[in-house]
Image (tube, rainbow, N blue to C red; front, side, top):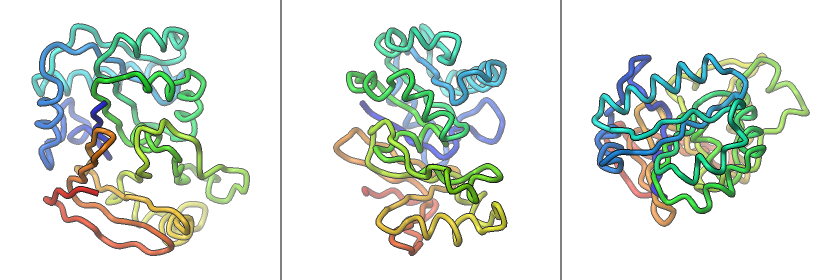
Length: 238
């Protein structure tokens, strides 16, 4: 399996892939010929939103020259067909959304095991990227989550990668949640004993299970410290 773990796949809200750090070009190179794709949603019951975002991603990929022989949206309507859909696909796209909601859906359909025999290309978007880790850091996002002692910040993931990723750092670094600074008061203290890679939009990680390359600006949060480890136009192995 070759994978792209992105912070944001699209260029704004338009049906166009972001080509910052050659992302669109790299995806097009890996997806030559007609693809059989499945778009795995975050909220299995948000049918209208799933159709809308799934269609936008499809259009963006097509606008980058990628052709499809089939493109299926996998959510609560057809989750019983998950095994067949994944088995017949050579491109799997994991939607953005709410990390714990998506994580529960992935576990319900057994996606981790299904990807164990998948040898195509995988694209993670935001929450989909986060859920690719073996142990997922589900950074609090919604009001009440940071203050809830019962909210689970570490979840079992798909084990596509060992890397714990936090997307949209450029947008969220100064956010206040439940009266606390998202990074200074929540995420940086949570990093004790852990290593998080905070990606800015336009940055991504690509890999194949034996190597990973970080492309674009990113920050390492580890053992209560944060430091910038790559610049906006830098590519490096991690």
